[in-house]
Structure formats: structure tokens, C-alpha cells
Length: 160
Image 1 (cartoon, rainbow, N blue to C red):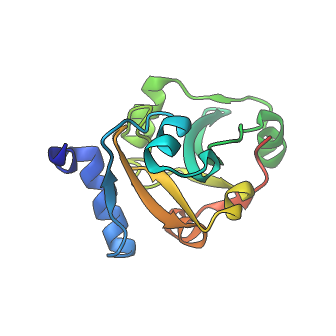
Image 2: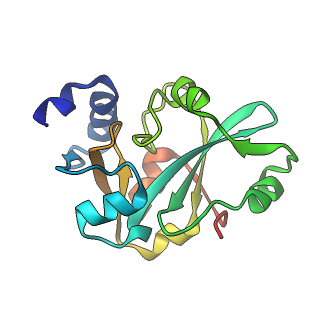
Image 3: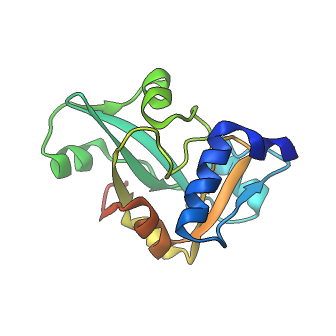
């Protein structure tokens, strides 16, 4: 499992985290964190403390929504906030092309393309949250305020 840190997507996340705060580290899990439920089980934390990084397509452009693991992103709220009618989940190829990550390991940071990031305010109920770190067995722990700062994201109410 140690060689996971040598994988390009995981390494990209670790470098990004280190530039922001040298104390932030990628955590390698023995079991998968492919889903929020799996991650919470592996980390022995609430499902809501897991950050789901979801890529959406809005009228041809892409953005990331960071949602608590126990919530769903509301397309209706997203459409109102973005003032766009055509908003949908991106497919696996679009996720890989825009973020550089495969589904199951999409990090909230270190995307290969510049993406707007919306952060659901429901994540603020947790002192610390866990985001994917480029691989289904890799995560990182960060506090909510740092998550906003490191992603340069906008806090919005986008979950249901």
C-alpha cells in the first residue's frame, strides 16, 4: 500500500496539500474509501464528515461541488445559484479529463484544470472533514475553514 504515495494523482494531491500547510498529509487506508459510507467505515467517523467531490456540467462548463457524505447535491439549488438551466453530473471521461482523477478518488484539490468550486455549508457542522486524495484508498483530513481556503471555494447551500 505504501507505493500509493508514488502514484501521480496521489502525489499531486500531497504536493498541493504541502504547499498550503506542511501538516496536511495523505492518509493511506487499508480498506477502500471509494464511497462516503466506505470511507466513514474505514475512518470510524460520521458519513457526513466525508467530502464528496462531484463534477457537474453546466451549459458546457464544469465545476466541482463538495458535499457532505450524508447529503445529496440538489440540482435545483445548483441551477438557481448558477442561473443555468442545463446542469447535470459529468460522466467518468469528463471527470478524468477535467480533474485528472478517476471516480472514487476525486480530490477537492489539485485538479488539472481550473474549476469553480462550491462547498456545501452542511460540511461546517464538523470540526474536521476527510477528502479523497487521488485514489480510492487515500484521503486527507482538514478542518472546514482550511477546506474553504485551500479550494478557494464558495460556501453555498447546495444539498438536500
